[in-house]
Length: 377
Ligand SMILES: *Cc1c(COP(=O)(O)O)cnc(C)c1O
Image 1 (tube, protein in one colour):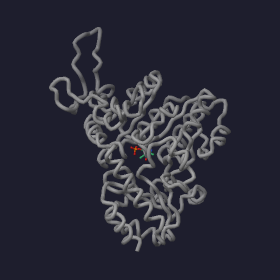
Image 2 (cartoon, helix red, strand yellow; image 1 turned 90 degrees about the vertical axis):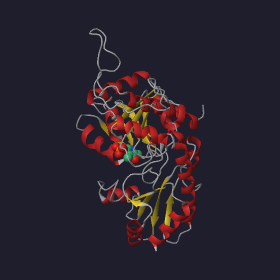
Image 3 (cartoon, protein in one colour; image 1 turned 135 degrees about the horizontal axis):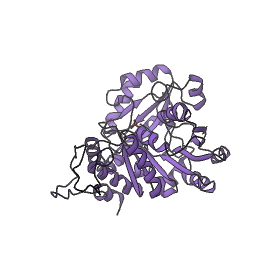
Image 4 (cartoon, protein in one colour; image 1 turned 135 degrees about the vertical axis):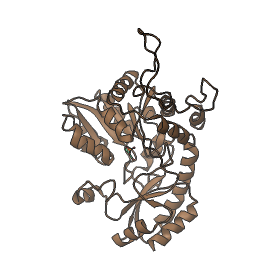
């Protein structure tokens, strides 16, 4: 089955009770039991809910995993999954990891004795050099945020295998439609489903997908113990959203290519970071591991004044955090996703005060271009 078909038919599509073309919202907390000796599969909805399960089964099929677990947010998925590690364990993490992941690793997991070394993951040698005897995992994002840096995921997974450790990949920017890290040899795929997977800027949710059943059991145990699972309403909305993932991604990506080509020639734009451009340093690696460059990119402007005018003056692209919605979203990494980094650290990472990130939605690209033009002046 091709992915477009899996999006519609990959998970449970029919309600067994009624034949309804979809799994209903099981808005319920507990289930009546019939036997004192054997509780049924469903006993309490912190553990199991059929609507959540339908969504989990769908995402597992899309990523090619044996199991998916759905969480109350991307951060709930990431934090719950990181609880598989123990005090004394060490992780190698890409240095431009999502800010929320950086926060839990550097302020919470570090306090519990799980330490991290942040490395430039575009350099496989740097990843391998950071591995110590107590290292248990490599945590990556490709392309990364906000500079769309590309990591060779096959190469990283190969290093992990050689050292007997696992690879975790946050696949939010790509979605399983464009990139499937399990097929590249990685062990755990994490998602903020809030972004492209749900796609309508109306749900916060997250996923962890694994190939190994035992690993799935361990994460599932923590999900139930901590109560970080996704509620039935949000599961339903996300199931509804993911059905159109292919058509949304195809169109947003097409729009992105148009806008990127236009911005490259713009007199006020000094750089464009997008793995779909042949001049991008990760172009070849990205093309070898993903089915498209996606619909998020960043670019640099000639001055802070232009940057401010653009952010405050764009009418179609909403000046907001987040990405992956049907509406375009323009964001400002220096004051949003990376605001917690000191300015010197941001500068060192290339996150300038003139850098803007755009997540391209489904508007007509001509209208988006006209809007960006009027805003930049
Ligand atoms: C948004 C995001 C997250 C966090 O997800 P939430 O759903 O906001 O908790 C994690 N990783 C990436 C790459 C993101 O963009």
